Length: 92
Image 1 (tube, rainbow, N blue to C red):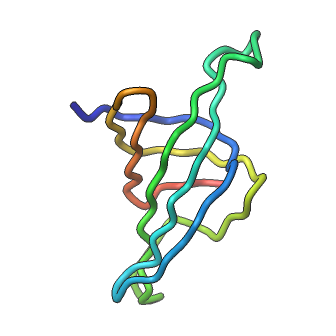
Image 2 (cartoon, rainbow, N blue to C red):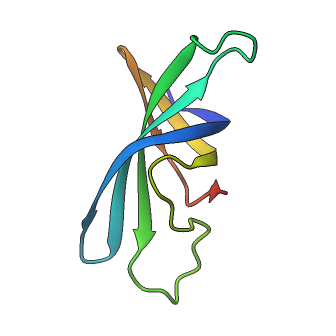
């Protein structure tokens, strides 16, 4: 069942591929679960769809491995990982 997520996360790695209408970025992000214990983390698999047509408004700015971003979107919890599909809302 989908739920909403809003979190700061670290871009651990990502790949991107081009389709006809979108640049699809598949991201592995890391978020802390506890501010007091840095060993308690969760890995997020994020898929971002960025329109190829630059006339279409998009709130996702270009990012690089190692950056910290604010992630806001919907996610689905799966066995041992979370799948996050962002609705074009990644803030830096």
